[in-house]
Length: 133
Image (spheres, rainbow, N blue to C red):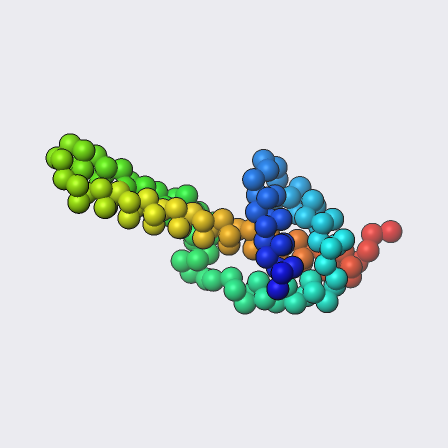
C-alpha cells in the first residue's frame, strides 16, 4: 500500500497550507486523479474507512490540540515544580507529559489527513457519477 502512504503524506502536506477544506480537497483531487486508478481509489477508501476510529479517536481528530492541552499543562507543571523544588524526578513528569501531548497531536494530525483523503475520494466518486456538462 505504497499509494496509501503517499496519499497520506500528500494530505498532510495540504493540511499545512492555510486554506479552506474545499480548496485542500480540490488540490488533492487533481493529484489523486492523476496518480491513482479508480480501482485503487476504491480500495484505499475502504481501507481508510476501516481504519478510522470512533469515539475518542474521532474527538482527537476533531480537537487534537484541546485533547493534548492537559498533557502540556502536566509537562509545564512538572517543569515548574522540578525547577522550584529542585526535585529531578519531576522532570520525568515533564518528559512524560510532553511525550503524551506530542503523540496525541501527531495521531490527530494523521487522522485528519486520512479524513481529508476520504472526503477527496468521495468527491471524486461523486464527480465520476455525475459529470458536469
